[in-house]
Each structure stands twice: as structure tokens, then as C-alpha cells.
Image (cartoon, each protein chain N blue to C red):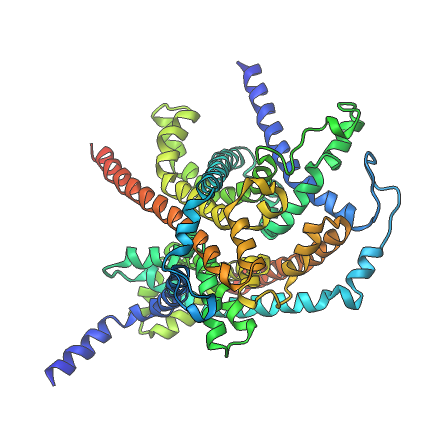
Length: 300
Length: 272
């Protein structure tokens, strides 16, 4: 009897926690469960579907070929996109909060890309930035160029500039949207204190805003990074095939060469997921350190 | 000194205007493309206008309404799942303290930080083997996985802003948990809830790869119809489909503002 009493009491005490359970089970079942299932496929299980092969063949094949170079390019572009959109996003959020806080239309402009899928962003930026695109026509009418060959190659180009532009179009507004509420709040709360202590604007940004914003800012950049790492539409439409973006390569393997090649596609994506996870763990460790040292600064 | 400040201001405005143009101009080019089939270089504006692409969109082979219905059905199921699963989770995370809370939070947000193509591929094989779920539901499950982190974070933040003071007051006056939820929390959170749902619908409608994988490329939502045209470079057709995609989004935003206004009047008008 006592055991039952204790159990009901404990259930009653933690009753409120049941709210989090359905969502948690959903994520564990679908996200982690799906991941484990994929991992088993990539190792070579389910031979009746994917054909008989030695265990781990997909990974052996990956690390034999030019996969590492592709991994470098993919991670490099993802890193460049996240840094660029992080810095530009913070800058724009600061400028909007300082200069245009009473002009709603400027904020609306930076909210527009949120309703546009990556697929359409890729297509639209191709249409304006390509050599016969709209910007090249404008340059022609302004007299800057006299034939479309004179316009720089920005789409399907050597350096992936088109991909970078398209991602910026989508991700800079995302960072702005993420940071803006916090920036206005901080400016509002700290302006008087900072002015009283005699600091100027740049000092305020360096010593007040950035330290407080850092976790959200870096978190936002991490979201962008892992998104770019796994997304397909923009590189598929705007990059040269010779670039070897891993999501594009994996998608070709997944759809074009039959079931027996699908474990390889899954293996590629698993490597990407691990890169993202690894960087996440490093960031979380840094954040912990930052918080610890930050607290010491406040106390001292 | 005066002059320096003026130059600085001008530079800042130039930068902001430049960024705004970077965002807006592609959209204008899109609208122009939808009304022409032929627009050779170096014409700044098309000389020959035509509505051919629009008539293709609404012809039987254009499948405009089928695509829209599919997208909306999936987005609707996704929103429902988000409310059922995400709302109580956000409330609990904001109002309760328990051990392992940080871990639970990280786990719930993990689909944001780790590319989920892997999980989706695994889930597709699982759903093929189980074979009883219609594509609508399996796709909506994956869309829920994509959108729930945003949904939970936004509502969690709003619950934090709300605090627990008002609820404690109500509780000390004898209100039960359900009454507090129904008469205090829900009305105060409706604006945030509406915004989160809008966000979920928009994100769900833009998904390409997860939809493709889960349905094996057979469930024709808007992005799945658009992609082949975009990769074959049919500018005018893609422009028309894109605008067709924006129609429900703009309508939903308008509905959101109307509901928001109504809600503010109803909730905050009564209080004031």
C-alpha cells in the first residue's frame, strides 16, 4: 500500500512534466529512430532490399574516392555562408534598431525572404545575376558594359559566388529576424547606463551587446551552417557539377542508380550529420567556458 | 565633425538601401517574367507581353489546384501536430523546473542543428516496410520534425515573457489549472500562437527534399512541381508557379493580421 501511495504521490508531483513527453517521444522516435535505421542501412544491413555486400562497404567506397575534397568544399561553403550571414545579419539588425526603429516598412523588407522557399530563391537570383540577366541589362543601359560577355560570371561560376549570393538572400534576413527583438531590447535596457558611464556606441556594441547576444548569435550561425550542409536546392540549381556538393551527389546516388546505391547516399549524409554534430559539441563546450568566464567578470 | 556624422549617416543609408534592393529586385524580375515568354538581352523591360504561362498554370496539365491542395493539406496536418505536441512542451519547459531540462531542450531543438536528410531517408524505408500510412501523414510527420523546433522556441519565449504571476493570482483565487489555461494563458498567447502557426505553414510549404523522399516523389506539392521547370530553365513558367505559391502565403499573412487585430480588441480591449 505504501509503495502505491508513494508512486501516486510522485506521479502527482511530476504530473506537469507530462506536457513535454509527447514532443520528446516524437523527436526521439522519428529523428533519432530514423537516424539509427538509416545508419543500419548504410552499414549494409537489410540485404534483401539493398543487395548483399560486405559490412561498411559504403564508407570504404566513400573514403577511397574524391569524397574528402567534396567534403572540404561543402563544409567550406557552409562555413562561409554562416559567417557572412552572421556578420551581415548582426550589422543590419543593429542599424535597423538604431536608425529605423520607427519605420516598419524597412523591417517588412527584411521579412520578405522568409516566405520564399530556397528553391525559388535559387531560381530568382539566377534570373537576375546571370550573364544575360536583369542586372547585366541594367549595367548595359547604364553604359558600364557593352556586351553580356563583359558581365562577370556569377552563376555556375568557378568560386561558388552564385551559391553564396542565393544563400545570403535567404539567411541574412533569417539572422536579422532572429536577432532584432533582442537587439532592440538590449539597446532599450542598456543605453542609459552606458551613456552615464561615458561609453560611445562602438564601445557599447563591443562590450555590452555582443557578449550578451553571443549565444543566440552563434546559435543562429550554427543553424545556418547545418542547414546549408544538408540542403540541396540551391547548389543543385546554381553550382557547377564539378564542385561536388555532397547533398547534390548524395541525391544523385539516391535517385538515379537504383536501390543498391542508396546506402552510399545515406552514408554521405551521415558523414555530414556527424560534421554538424561535432561542430555543435565544440560550440557547446565553448559556450560553457564563455558562461563560466563571463560570470567571473560580472562578479569581479 | 558635423560633416563626418553626415557622411556616416549617408553610408549607412546607402548600405541599407543597397541591401533592400538586393532583396526586392529579384522579386520584381519574377513578376515581370510571369507576363512574358520572350525577353531577350538587353531589353530592360519585355517588349512582348503574354499570358501563355498563366493559361498553362490553370490548364489541366498545369495542376495548379492539385498542388496547392496537397501543400495546404500537409501544412494543415503539420500545424495540428505542432499544436498538439509543441504547445504543452513549450508550457512545461517554461513553467517547470526539473533535472535534465537542458538535455530535453537540446533534444527537442536538435533537428535544427543536425541535417535531417538522414533521418528522413530512414523513415521513408520504415514507412515503406510498415506500409499503412498515407503519404499525407508520413510527409506531415517529417514536416513536423522540421518545424517543431521553431514552434517550441517561439512559444517558450512567449511563455517566459508572460511569467507566472497572473496565474498564481488566479490560482490563489481558486481557479483550477484548466481554467487558468483557458481564461488567462490562451487569450494572452493567441497572438504568438497565430504567428507561430503562420511560420509553420510557410516552412512546411517550402519543403522540397523531405516531401520528395517521404512520398517517393509522387506527392505533388508546390515545390515538387516547380523544381523540374527551374532546373530546365523555363523562366516564365517558374515565375507563374512562384506567384501562385505566394498567393496563399500572402492571404495567410492577411488573415493573420485580421485575426491579430480582432484578438487584440477582444482580449486587451476588455482589460483596458
